[in-house]
Amino acid sequence: MAVYTHLTAAEIAEFLDAYDVGDLRSAKGIAEGVSNSNWLIETERAHASQRFILTVFEARTEADDLPYFLSLLDHLAAKGLPVPRTIHTRDGALMREARGKPCALIEFLPGVSVDEPEPAQARAVGIALADLHLAAEDFPQSRASSLSLPICVQMLRDNAAKFDEIDPQLDTIIPDCGAGVLEHWPVDLPAGTIHSDLFPDNVLSVGDRVTGLIDFYFACSGILAYDLAVTHAAWSFDLADNAFRPDVGHALIEGYESCRPLSDAERGALPLLAQGACLRFVATRVEDWFATPVDGLVRRKNPMQFAHRLAFYRAQGEAAFTL
Ligand SMILES: Nc1ncnc2c1ncn2[C@@H]1O[C@H](COP(=O)(O)OP(=O)(O)O)[C@@H](O)[C@H]1O
Ligand SMILES: N[C@@H](CCOP(=O)(O)O)C(=O)O
Image (cartoon, rainbow, N blue to C red):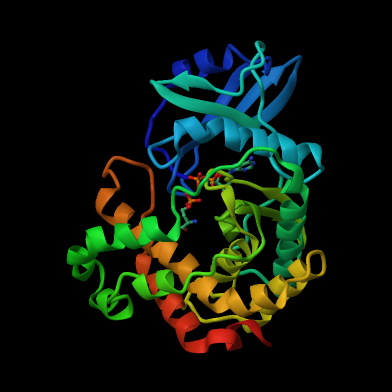
């Protein structure tokens, strides 16, 4: 998340007029994340203050997909998962426009995102991910991923000529832009509704307790073990030096399996699924590297962080998933 669309206080107040949330008291842009523009909103009603998140959906979030995302949030919230409910307007609408872009007002959840997760926190996230998969089993809608592996391989091919502008090692790590992973991609593993971006900055915690799962704007229909591989690749490496944390990775998987045991086929596919997950994040970070506007309140994310993680999974294979 970031702030690309700089709404004025008057525009935010006008936007909130359609909601029964009181009067605007403050609005602060949130720098974390890179996909959408987000604001921390505080309102006042009957001398009581409330906080919300106002999201302005930017280019990477398909406007036509918003009913899917927001309905999924409502489905999971109704099942008791710690996800933000969508605030509906007085007329019952899930979204409104501001500055010509689709926007939503969502529930503010307590908790902080951890930068250096410990095993106990990773285990709790594994449990939360399994709960999400199980709670979404009866979610009636489906959505194809807009960042499937074939799409990401093509994104990398489209930018391959500029890899050296990022890091000379990038071409060495992915000389085929991921074609080899795509060639062996599994097709018959259990599938369902997945988050597909459950990074530490998309999980809110109070101590070891997960208090918020957010940023469902890459959610789609997909391989359940792929979602676990995404989360493993995002959580199991130190922020400072990208060093692998086997204790954290093991706790994540153990937490997940305590609620939803993996089949032998799913467990055996994790090394390849993790490479595919890393390719997806290298692809979008490479594209963002060359596309991030200079006036956005945003911190570009380094593609090499996941290029090196991809090389790790390729070298380690199943050893990356055994303690
Ligand atoms: N519902 C929420 N409750 C509390 N904080 C939130 C909520 N949604 C987003 N945030 C804050 O905004 C940050 C980025 O939000 P995120 O949805 O990840 O943005 P993006 O879509 O750009 O990735 C989070 O790390 C968190 O600090
Ligand atoms: N989490 C991914 C994709 C960007 O996600 P966002 O939540 O920051 O929009 C990454 O880190 O590349």
